[in-house]
Length: 122
Image (cartoon, rainbow, N blue to C red; front, side, top):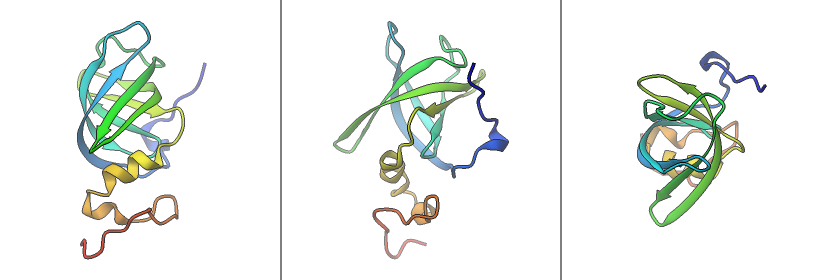
């Protein structure tokens, strides 16, 4: 069984977020929920985890502006308030699309400069 990282073991920066996404597991209905924070490795969702268990394989659907994305992920945390998911592969494009609208998110990602840097943001 795969060992999941605890919050103290996370190495990727997390930024606050507030956007709607859809979740789906094989053979299950789509669930609409809200992202609370985001990193290139995963996100925390405002969802109580009903019907999901730690280790569940899910697909995440996001539509940002006109860009639509489907991301494979795994549930790594779940309680009555929120659910944490880890993407199976890092998602720097999703992170940049969301974090670009957050003024303090113009900082480097893993020592790399973001694709677009907003000038004048403080």
